[in-house]
Amino acid sequence: MSINSKHIDSLIKGCIKQKREAQKMLYEEYHGYCMSICLRYAESREDAVEMMNDGFLKVFNYIKSYDHARPFKTWLRRIMINSTLDHIKKYQIKLEQQEIEEGIRELISETQLDQLSYEELLGLIRELPLAYRTVFNLHAIEGYKHEEIAEMLNISTGTSKSNYFKAKKKLQELLRKYFEVEY
Image (tube, rainbow, N blue to C red):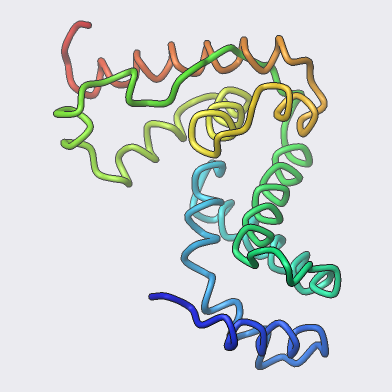
């Protein structure tokens, strides 16, 4: 469903005025989009809900700083990603890193990819250790460069690359098990 920009502007103005109804409507409009982002980073659905709710709290607290010249969805996405990273930093041991240069398409064939549902793919990604999963999501799915990831996670670029590499290797193992084939 395409969201009308006048409608969003109206909701944003309501949120700036801290009107509960506007906040509720904004939350409802973007709940699915934000949840899909958080699910990629979370250990469980419950963690994803917590990450998303923390993200929406930040949205409502900082909505006055939203630059109306930029797309709202881009601003919202950045907040949700930062919220997931804050959650990870808050509840986990130090991130290790790995080099991985391409996304999941490199790991399996198109035919196999077609056999995986979105939920199955998410499940396999969730099996990755937290440090690997975080870098994999940021690089392969979100499209961040290793230098950007290193800055976000307060790690070296080499650590980011190393974790990406290890994440890909671990995903290949998980996919082999899943498809019970040898590559």
